[in-house]
Every structure is written in C-alpha cells, then in structure tokens.
Length: 352
Figure 1 (cartoon, rainbow, N blue to C red):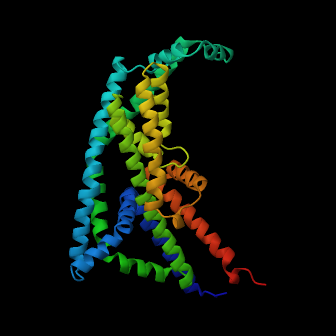
Figure 2 (cartoon, rainbow, N blue to C red):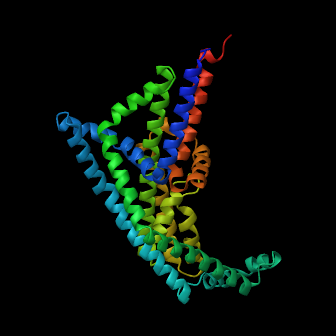
Figure 3 (cartoon, one colour):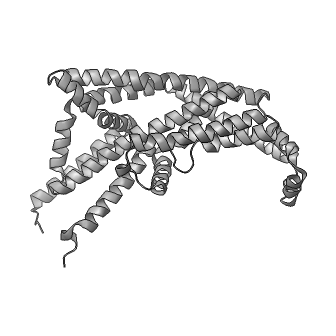
C-alpha cells in the first residue's frame, strides 16, 4: 500500500474540496452541461468525419457539427415544445369549459357494457357512477391545471432557458473541438490500469450513444406514429398524446400501448368500431413493431441490457434526476454491470 506524507494527504484533501466546490458552482447549469456532454459523445463520429473533410481544422469541423446539431435537433425540439405548450393550454381550457369531460366518457363506456359486466361492477361497489364521474372530472381538472401551470412556468423561465441553451451550445463547441484531448487527460487522471479505463470508457460512451440514438429515436418514431393515427381518427390534442406516447416508449415493457390501447377500447365499446379496429391494427402492426425493427438496428445486440434492468434504471433515474434520468439511469446500470464484470473476471481480485 502507498504511504502518503502529510503534504500529500493535505493536497488530496484540497483536491477533493475544490472539486466539490467546483461541482457545486456548476449545479445551476448541470442539465445544460449534461446534455452538452451527451450531444458531444453522440455526434463525435460526425465531428471526426468533418475533421477529415476540412483537412484537420478542428475549429471549422466543430462549427459545422454544431450548426448541424442546431438544425437537426435544437430547432425541431423548440418548435415542437412551443406547439405542445399551446396544445396543453387549449386542452386545459376545453376541460374547464366542459367540452372534454372524462366522467361523461366513462359513463358512455359503462352504458355500452354487457349486463354481466355491469353486475360484476356492482359486486365491487363500482355502480355509483355519479361519484365516479365526479372523481374522474376532478382528477382530469387537476392534471390539466398542473399541465397549464407547467406551461406558464416554462413561459416565465424563458430567460433561464435561453441562458442554459447558450451554455450548452457554448460548451458543446469546445467539447466537439477539444473532446479527444479532454478524454485523454481524464483517462490519465483516473488511478486505474489502462485495461480497466479503456473498458469502462468504451462502455460509458457506447451506452450513452445507444440510449440516446436508439431509445430516443424509437420513442420519437412511436410518438410520431401514434400522434398521426390519433389525428387521423379525430382524437383531441394529437400532439400532446404523441409526446406522452414518446415518453412512455422510453420504458421497455410499457410503451405507447398504455395510451392508444385504452382509446381503442373506448372506440369499440362506444360503437366506433372501425376507428377502434384501425387503431388496434395500426398500434400492433406499426407502432408495436417499430421497437422490434428499429432498436436492434440503432442500438445493436451487443450493447442491449436486459429489459427489466433498463426499465428499473430508467424509472429510478427519472425519479431522481427528472428528464435527464432516462440517460443517467441506464448509464449507471451499464457501468454497474461493467465494474462487477471486471471484478469477477479479473484474476488479481481473486487470489488463489
């Protein structure tokens, strides 16, 4: 074991203290920094391609990559977010005015059920339809108020959002330009042997790329297809439901079906047979198959963790870190598996 002198111990303490202080200073913009790092890792291959095209001019290559990210990612997300806020506020107003009444929808479903199902509801004391209608309406109103408050908060924090966006893009430029040298210095600073560092860094970057490129693109595809079929069938606020389906698609074994399946059932029990059949066929044959077709192509079989681990780590990550957690959770889970795999497979940790 290495014996540290008093001077070395004090320096290590100082190093930890200033590192924690620096992290604390960066906390207000942790989300912007996090997504800057994620985008830099995700678009690093494109940056290297531009670097070859520009004959090893890193600044020009970084600017070209950054411009492409703004056009392909930032601008579309900004437009979708603005439309989503407007649609959420419109749904809130429709619920308040009674134009959308979830309690009435529930009553229509109950009245369309066979008598034996109604009798079963009576056995479980679910026949007080007025009370259920009131509870459903109250719950819908609370949800819509929450959405409206979030929309107002987004509007009131426009300046903070713009500052965070500037920080992310500014940092992203330097990460794209100097990312390779920064990664080399970080690897050198970590007190592990080269074989451990190489394996952990490779796993880290692979999982981030797989999570963002694979899961996000699959979620976007499923959400877009779900919103398209909802618009075709005349469902209120198709963009809002498309975003909900996209978020739920991030969770394996849950998916967009938790949104479109109840709507299809509602169509069937209320007499809108062709709408229900079309939605079920489209949901199973198109939306449902997107995950099975696109995810292996975008992610790859070698980097795919078990679905139950992805589900648990994604839910836990989002519970702790919000939206950032759908990337942080799987990355932590993948590093957990990689570290334990190294520990189990390395002989120096298991002396005979």
